Length: 169
Image (cartoon, rainbow, N blue to C red; front, side, top):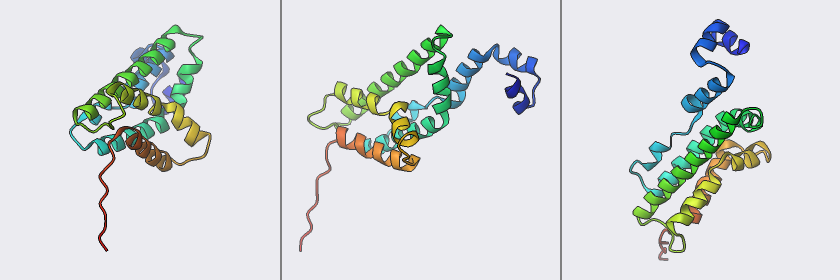
């Protein structure tokens, strides 16, 4: 808390007064500054563009929140509130994945061999920070490489293929 006070130019008691304790400060940070804005993903746009926007949002979130999420996961044993927070984050991710899958189904954009439930499961599995960490932090991919891959993978796994046009000679 002392480092936060020093970095923000506030007195330590002011930081405690505004946030209460470290746990509450972390929760507030996640809720206000780091949490992905899934609401923008259901706004009208093409299904492919919706998936591209999701990939972009996940990269932006994951690149900012990796350290904070690791702190939350590591602190679960010390504070049960962190376990509830992590469950909420994962539950929200599931809810939003289901909502996106529903919009794709409503648009008639899902592949014939994908149910809406399967689409939600695929989105839920791929848009977590876990894959970002595996590809970017552990395998050396750039954010741009991962975003391009995630967008293309979601489209390939979920969307009907575009009709191919043939060139006449």
